[in-house]
Structure formats: C-alpha cells, structure tokens
Amino acid sequence: MENKKKLSIVVFLLILFAFCQKSAKCEKPPDIVIIIADDIGYSDFGCYGGEIPTPNIDKIAERGILFTNYYTENMCAPTRAALLTGRYHIRGYNKEGNITISEGLSTAGYISYAVGKWHNAGEKIMDRRAPLKRGFNHFFGTPQGTSNYYAPITLTRDGEPAEEEWQDEDFYYTDAITDNAVEYIKNTPENTPLFLYTAYNAAHWPLHARQEDVRKHEGRYFMGWDELRKQRLRKMKKLGIVPDDMPLSPRDSLVPAWEDEEHKAWQERRMEVYAAQIEVMDRGIGRIVTELKKTGRINNTLLLVLVDNGGCHVEYDKERRGPFLSEYTRKGEPVKIGNIPGVMPGPEDTWQSYGRGWANASNTPFRLFKRHDHEGGIRVPLIVQWPDVIKNGGQITGQVAHVIDILPTVLETASVAYPSSYKNRNVDSPDGISLLPIIYGKKRNPHNVLYWQYSRGAAILKGNWKLVRIINNPWELYDLSKDPVEMNNLADQYPERVEELSILWKKWKEQGE
Image 1 (cartoon, rainbow, N blue to C red):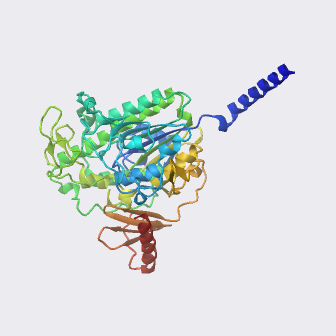
Image 2: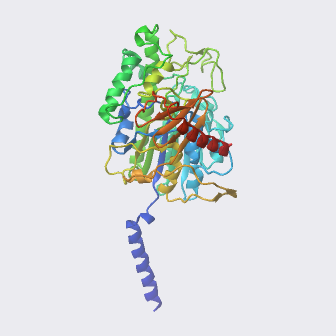
Image 3: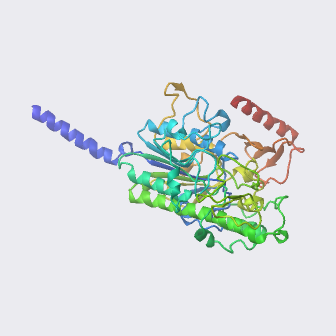
C-alpha cells in the first residue's frame, strides 16, 4: 500500500512537471532590458527618418513596435525619475510614496543591473551608491548628468570609485557601458530573470568621438541644416512616421540660413561627431542584442529602446564649468572649453556641443528643444521588441504614451502586483498606465490628461488640446490634431479652454509640491 502511495505521488509530480512545461505560469519570467539614449531628437534614428546609420536600432523596430506619439519630461533627470518610479517627477524620486522598477522586480526574484548615466531629479548628483540604494544589485557608470567620454569623472563600480579604469588609452565611455552590459547578461545564472537598465551618455555633450568613427561621417552634412530638415521630413513621410500632410516648422528664429553660416566646416564637424556618437551607441546596442541571443534570452525579453528628451540646443559657453568637466586630458593637456569656431570637436582636449541649428534638425519637424515642453523637447523615439509576444514586427502605433508608463508596463510584464507598501513605507499608486495592451496589439485606454513642468517649460495635454508655455511667458494653446508643429496659437480664440486647462495644471502642480 505504501509503495502505491509513493508511486501515485511520483506520477502526480511527473504530470505536474509536464503541465508546467507548457504553462506560462511555470515558465521563467521575461527578462527586461531598457536602453535609454540621451539628448537625441525625434528624427535622428534611421527608423524615424534620420540619415545617421542605426542598423541595430532599426532591426529592433523591424521586429517590434515603433511609437510615434511617445512623450518624456523635457530634461534628463526628471525623465529618469519618472521612468524608474512610474510617477511624475514632481511627486519625486527621492520622496516617500514610490518604488523603483528594480525594487518592484526584486520581489519576483529578478537580479537588477544599472549601467551608465544615473542622474535622477532631486537626488544628490555625486552619490556613487544611489542605484544600489534603490534596488539595483550592481552598478557601473556615473551618478552625475554628463561625462567626459574618455575620462568620466565619478566613474563608479558597485558604489566604489573606478576612475582607474579610464587610464587605459583605449577607454571610451560608450563602449565601456556596452562592455559591462554584455558582461552582466553573460554572468547572470541561466534560470534567473534579469533587469538590465542601460543608460548611455550618448549623444549628450561634450562632442567626443574617436577620429576613425568621425571619419565615416565626413561630408555627410555638407548640405547644411535647412536641407537636412527637408530630407528628413520626406523620409519620415515615406516611412509612415508622420502623415503625408505634416508641415515643417520654420527654421528656429535664432538659427541663420545655412547659406549665411560663416563657419560651415566647423558646423559640419559638430554634426559629424554627434552622428558618430550615435552610431557607436547603436553598435553597442547590437552587441547587447547579440548577447541576449547567445544566452538564449532574446525571445522572452521585453526590450525597450527610448530617449530621455529632444535634441539639446545649448551652445556651450567658454566660461561654463561644472563637476562633470575635465579641464585637463589624461595626459595633462588643457581642454579647449566652449563652442569655438575653428576648434574641431571630437578629441579629448575639446569640450563642445552641437548647437541650436543641428538640434533644430534633430527635432524635425517640431520646434524648440530640450528644456521646453513644446513637441521638440518632449516627443521622442520609443521602440518595443518582445519576440515571444510581438509576432508581427515593423508595426507603427500612434497611440499616446508617456515615460511614466514604463514602470507599470514592466511590472505587469513580470506579473508583479504594484504594492501598497514596500520595506515598511507606504507606496502610492503610479501615475503611469501599462503599455501591454498596445504590445499585445490592442487599443489601450489612454491617459485622460498628461502634465509637464520643469526648467523652461510647462504644459498640459487633454485629448488633442495642448496648453504650453515657456517660463515667464503667457500660455499658448494648440490643437495637435490640426497643428502638430504648434504654429497656430489659439489662446485668444478659446480663452475658456485656456482657463480650464490652466486650472487643471495648477491643481496638479500644487498636489506635487
């Protein structure tokens, strides 16, 4: 009798095991990989209409879903705070009432890695242990907002200084980020789900790229920014990124016509270096995807490629300093600081940005830039791939999404319920809404209202109506369904709508303070 009971138990376990082999509930949870690029415009990637070679990002789009109405905050730090917490940045990364993606996933047995730029709003920018305090098991990167690509100040490994790693003359920060991301994937135990947050510094200033990478782009921008904007818009229409009747916003008022530009060779080099920075990053993304394939993870990996805000118009001043700035090279040579015509950017002894004219082209067809809440500052690429789920690749969706939606998407993907408390602290509901319905090919219930406020911008979006302003200026009102490039201000025509939306925005802001 006892043997029969033992046999019955064995048979039951074998049946249960067989069932689990077929049941999604018994499978290893999906791996999650988020790749975020820095200060890159709506039209820079090839799959969004750009001429910069991004074959690896384009392949991800070909196998996944490309979003054309994805919004972020208008600067690096608030976007990262919103991404990691699923809450508007004004409710705070460092305030009570939130969890990070890594903290949420830790409850489901995930190992979490942070690689690259950290930089969250409201946080001490030099805290080398910041990611480790918020649920990440390992961190390689820099805590502050930007870095020298050849010798990044505050380079950190698991909370300890790692500046000695860039003493190698071949060190280049973008490649180091990729190297460590690949190693983290390679070293994760086979049956352990991973969360890899890879935050490239590219293509944030300074304009640093190796000569051999810049050389590939020589002559690419001979036509100048005016013609480049036209070429990009034509390609965007052909790809279906924008409708055929999408207008091109006028050239920014502070940017001269290309034919009137005095320093064409220098201007071309600025954009050549910027393009090289993006191409090197794309090469690294290809290596990350390859490692996911090698380790057998790719098919069950939710992979998101996104950008933190639009192209950056900042003209780097010769007098500007900061904790990120290296005033001398590794060999002790003085760095030539600032956008000085004739000083060609790229080498370690330069520190420049690509400026207003090229940022205007990056943000084609929109106007304004990073730090603003007009479309040029907050509407950027988002690409999602998940081979086990997205069978029909190459999709383009116009459904509206926001960076606050990333955390709810990831937690739902991992079957992690959003908690009401975490480590003895109360946790409020996220502001974001999961994107999984879109990923599964359905229509998602959209946000009723979206809000923005940071730096030089403020905005509210309700349906097609967007109320937006530059700080210390009056509100502007646009119907994005008819005026997507925000050129026809309807504030005087619809004062009651301005009042309605401004009251909603003010109430939201006061709740976050």
